[in-house]
Picture (cartoon, rainbow, N blue to C red):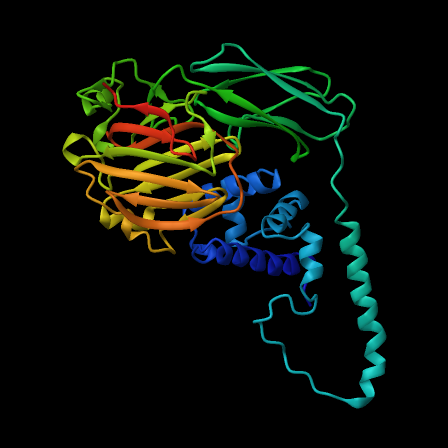
Length: 426
């Protein structure tokens, strides 16, 4: 006879397989680090509940000594379209939650039918009542107050002051979280009113007020740059980047050389650093579902790229970002694309067209029209897809290179092909 933990494990097996199927991932036990990171981000975007990478790893292995918390289970269920965990369990037959499992054959005796009918009905009713009691609706925190003030108008780092009032509630825990990253979370107290948080990266962040792991309120925090911000991602501490003080624009391109990287005590032999470029302000704006973005880039091995020569181009919006990645042809299994809330993984999709010779300049064009995106590489259409969730207004652009990549130009056009933003690095 199954106990409660065994039954929950069966449903967890169902939910993780549903996630694998819906997002075209490998079997749950074979998810990779990037899969967990992307799932953590997507689950919070869709449900407002933060599940850490370590929690998702335990769930994927389905190894528990006790049942996960109700909020965790509700988030998983909501992520794949159910109202909550109770809705998932009542939508799948109690006696046979995994249809593929074979039932033990039972002998049929005509005289047992009426005798077993009442006990079975009673058991089903008992479990239904138990599930209802364990799946109460989330508490409303509608009277909570939450707002923010920036210490400086633009630039990095930037300290944000959060004003809040949750004194009217009793709770076990409360936090303010900077954005999607659960690591940037600070505990707050019931009778206090202020909390400060340092933002190290630009972007259109969505700060979150959480009480008992429930998302209560979410507000935008727009951290802008005056111009291009040049950054080295520190392999020893990716939360705090290295801001490059040197002028990185010369010869008609923007580029952080390996020599510059070494000046900041980064060991190039580890092949694990990245150079990044941000332009985040109102000059770079528009409708994230109707625009065209064109750029030229490279990531030359002889000029400081790491082995797979990975490149990423992201367009920041109010509610998320679109991005594409390029790499050397032999590394396409590591690629991801994201448009709206839809992720496309190179593990389960043919992204071979995004593998290219990055030792030379490559022209990239992203054309968005009514939530249909068409990707061109060196003048050739290589990919087309649609998505449902809008990212709202465009807020900025971001490049990430594995090693030392370069950008030759960047141009943004609106839906009528009017030039909104142009940078030639002259």
